[in-house]
Length: 67
View 1 (cartoon, rainbow, N blue to C red):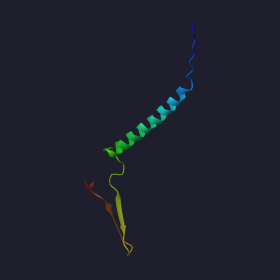
View 2: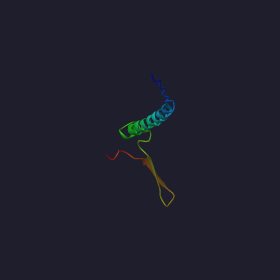
View 3: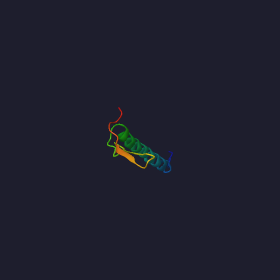
View 4: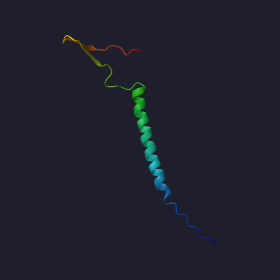
């Protein structure tokens, strides 16, 4: 009768690191997808300031999204 002992203790740590990296990629893609596909963006309408050569300035907010 033959007794065999298999020692696979080294392969588990590589799988754990790969799962951690893959999880980070999934979270990053979810955050990017949130902003691209219509999530709330805190800077929806930029402010506009045009300084003229005579020292005066025109200020306002840009309206509309251009779509």
